[in-house]
Length: 319
Image (cartoon, rainbow, N blue to C red; front, side):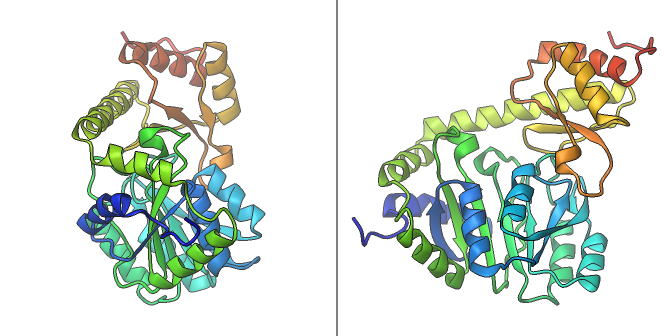
């Protein structure tokens, strides 16, 4: 047991097939979740004071982790297709950065998903920085309905992290990581000195579910339900003149002039949404709405309550 491989063969087979399907080729590893992978990889290559490029806005826990590691988060702007190549090029031309951390699909909180054209544009920008560590957090993985647009082809240092917590439940602490060989060796060695390995029981359970047609069929149905709920909310808000967005994922991004007032008013009306402040570096105010548990019959009420939260004097309500 103590000299066992990092990934058991019955799990390695479906994981490798999925990575290769998406054009991601490297050494395979597993960790206790996505954040565990990000932390371990960061500790291998990054040092206190290093600058790390992140999306603005970006995942709050990621920012907290970078702060705890003594790393400086440098934000680049993002739209529906992912990070803006011009913003990225501007940062790289002015500041020495050690890593780029991105979410190619279902970006949290904006729901952005990188297009193939945008991927190619970003690859062209980072081509002149061969030592830049690229970490991709594909947290939505099997729930994503869009093709995977990886930046890792030809990179010296990279890691693509796929969490299975959102698919099979948060208590399943497992993420698959496809990395360059050097990074994989370093991460594996550090694991052996700490927890040793990810439970083989959890690995077998994950392998069984990934290769079960009924289970994966249900995952596909869930992905379609999330898409329907997300699209319904965005389209309903559009009728009211509110430009919400979210290409994929659980979340819908809604620009607002005042985050705290909007959150409080919605809370008074029974809705729990998140203010954008903890996600933002220099980007504009917004609220984050999670649609995973938003019933279609409640969307109209939420939209009207949001209209009132933004303008208490409004008489333009949806029916």
